[in-house]
Structures are given as C-alpha cells and as structure tokens.
Image (cartoon, rainbow over all chains, first blue to last red):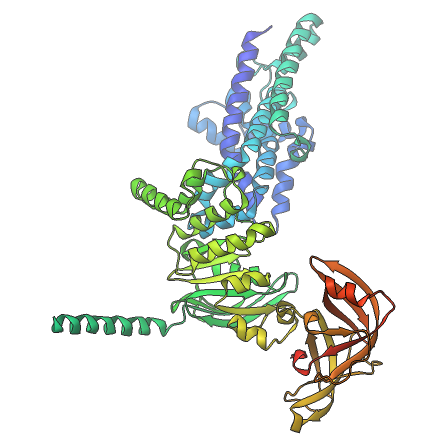
Length: 222
Length: 391
C-alpha cells in the first residue's frame, strides 16, 4: 500500500468536494429555479463530463491550463509555477470532471421542494436568499449528502483526467488509481489488488450512505 | 359632568367622521385581467368593504388565480389592485409591489406549513426581521389566542387537520397583514369536523380590522361565514351581494348549483301573460328542440322566443301517483318513474316527463306510495319554484 498516494487521493477528494459544494449550490439553484429559455444548454454543458471520455476532458484542460495558454501564463506570472502537473492543476481538472455529480443531485432535490412552500415564504415577507437557507436547503439534505458522497467517490476513482493533467509525480499527482496502473505495469498484481480493494471498499461505503439517505438514487443520476 | 359628557360625545363624533372618511376607500379594490398560458382568462372587477367576503365558484373558475394575483405570486396582464386606497398593483401607473412587501396573509389550500419547522418556528417564520424577545412575545400571544400553545414543539406531521389549519392561520395573522386570503382552508378536513372548525374560524376572523377573502366551493361554508359574497364562473364575476341576495335571484349555473337546483333546463319563452305576471316556457335538456314540455314561470323582461334557463330544486317538486285535481300549482307534468336511489335520508327519484326531472322524497313517502320504476306519476311544480337563470 502506497500511503503517500492514499493520503494524496483523500486530500484531492476533500478539496474537490468542498469546492464543488460551494460552487455547485448556486449552480444547482440556477438550474432548478431559472426560467431562462436556453437553460437546457447549461444543463447539457454541466452533464458533458459524464459522457465524454476522461482523456478528452483531460486533453482540453491540459491545453487550457498549459504554460502557453493565457490562463497558464497568468498563473505562472502570479505564482511562478505552471498549473499542469501540479496538485492545484489536478484539483481544477477534477472539479470539472466531478461537476455533474455535485450539481445534478442538488438541482434535483432543490426543484423537488414544494413550490407552495416557497410561495408561503415569499408572502410572509422573506427574501429568496433567506428562503433558500431556511426552507430549500434544509429540505434538500438528502441531495446534499448524495452530492457530497458521489463527488468524493467519483474524484477518488478518476484516472484519465489525472493522467492527462497531473501526470504521475509521487506525492504531487500520483493518486491511487494511477498507483494501481503502475503496479500492474510492474506485474506486481498482489500490490495492485490491495490498492484496488481499498478503492472498492471506500466506494461501497460511500454509496451505502447515499442509498440509505435516498432510496431513489436512480432519479438523480443521469 | 355635563361638559365631560359633551367632550366625550364630541370625540366620538370626530372618531366616527374619521372612520367614515377611512371607509370612503373600499377596503379592497380589484380590477384585473389575466390570460394564463393554458388559455384560461380571468377578467373581473369588484370592491369590498372590510370584513369577510366569500369568493364562490366551481373548481377551475379562477379563484386561486385571483388570490395569487392579489398576493403578488402571479402578475395580472392589466388592471389595478388596491388595499384601503393604496395600490399594490396598477398597470397604468406601473405599480407592482413585490410579493415580499405586500403584507398579505395567505392561508393556502394545502396550508403549506414548513414540514421541518416546529409549530412555534412556523408561526414565527414571518417575523425574522424582528428582535428576538419581541418576536417570542408575539408568537406566544398568537399561539395562546389560537389555543395551540401546547403544540408549539410539534412538527406539522404530528398535528391533526384542524390543528394544522389553526397553525397556518396563526402564521398568517402574526405578521399583522393588511389583507387575509383564505383558499379553501377547510377543504382538506373531514366533513364531520369541518363545520365545527368553520365556526371556530369565523370567530377568529370575523372581527379582524382588515378585509378577508374566503374562497370556497362549499355552500355550507357560505352560510356559516357569509356576510358578502362574489361568485366567479369561468374567470368572470357573475354575481355579488349578501348570500341571501345572490341566492334569491340566481343567475348562472354556479349560483344555481349553489342554491341547490338539481334540475336545470334550457328554455325558450313561448308566451307572455302580463296580466297574470307569468309566462310560458318550453323546456328541454338534451333533446330541447323536440321537447313539447311547457311550464309556467314567473314573468321577467323577455320577449317570446328569448332563450334562458330554468332551475328547479328537487325538493320543491311534489310527486303524485294519480292525476291531481283542484291544485293551485300551475305545472302538472305527467311522466314515468325511471329509477330511484337513496342518499342519506332522502330518496332521489328520476322521472321522465318529456324532460328528465329529479325529485326528492322522504323514505316514508316512498314506502307509503309503493313507488317502483315504471310506475306512472304526476309531478307538481309551483310557478314560483321555477327560477329563471341568465343563460
């Protein structure tokens, strides 16, 4: 067991989950309540990472974050370091990759809140923002749990984007899934088995939490 | 002593003048038109003084849309809504007060209590901007006056229908709204408790200093709560006044149904008898054109050939098993008993006398007349039991 890779993977998953909850909630709110006519385009865009091969996503992230792109140049001028093949670059790639797994369960449970409750809140003089925190969010706890667990599990298991954006640098970008790939390349099957089993157990525990909270998971998955 | 008396009466008269001036604005003024995306169109206007106004209409008549327009949950296409003279919506002057600032108390049909909050938190929900101690004091006072203090820590799911209803009313009233809207607040309750709760509700709302709009399609509630009523049919206002006024001169099917007309016929005036104060109408239902049934009705302003509708209450029709003689009633229709069924303690008899007519009988009458389907019968209807409705 490569503990360095294990803790790196956990660290990545925690960062991505926390950031995705913070930016995913307003995103999901917009998708759930906006009456914008082109909303379906935004929804399709958010759902893209589910159907795209991770290498495609990783490729474009690599191009956009690379040292020759405007974003990459700006980052280098700011920090003196490139974005690709660093932990920060990995976090950004993973956020894009796991975005639908945070936004879709949240949007689904937000829009499931009875619209008459929102009307009641408005009539009682309470603003939309306060209504969100006092009514919508408390009634969407199962959606928040689902989003958290799925984002965490999905980020832990990613491979393609990590390889494209992060490479394979021990302690910086070498996650468990890359680790397994290395171990198999070295024909070290027993070590690969140990690492793979850890990922299986974590994924199973997280999904059990989701299912115990929300028995109709299929509704929130695409 | 004398001067004190004079003073107090002077004060009284000043107060009276002020309140009279206040009353020069209608407590609620509504004139709106609104076309919904499903094609339904609401287009009506009315004004009410304070107190309870019943909004009566069948489901789908536009009652909830009307309340949503007043509350600001839906914007009318055009018109004006004013409470005590102050506009909250005016399309000409581009006034549209946002829903959060309208100070409307709205009790929804399904009550819309917040399921994750306790009774106390539900009632205090609209007082968020108020200092904590003051908020607690006002909530407690409201819980006491609604007699629900003992329930304050419960969640809505742990309450009975009647308790939930009181919580919803308390939540609306504690914010001291400038108008109270109640959308079929008793619809979710079982019939036996409904009338008792209607009575409680009337006691809670009848002395409020603000206008109250009470939407219902139950005639029992109209009579328990009614001071004034408006009747809506397919988005239009078709009658208004006291329940007595509205029901004694029923116009339109909604009112006819409310007044309890089981028999409603299309009719055409065939002759006018000005000297007798009556007229003759040919009536029919589905097979109107071929019908030969004529009845005598009270006279209204109508020329021969005018089409209108006649409503006859099933309880106003007499049934005889032999041809009656020597009766004052002008309408005696021969027919055949088609079927009978029992509803609670009355028997409904369906009679074919050229048109289909429903008659209410007592159980004893059915038994003593030995009625059975197929039997020849005569129906007797007084002229003044034939109510003319606008078509």
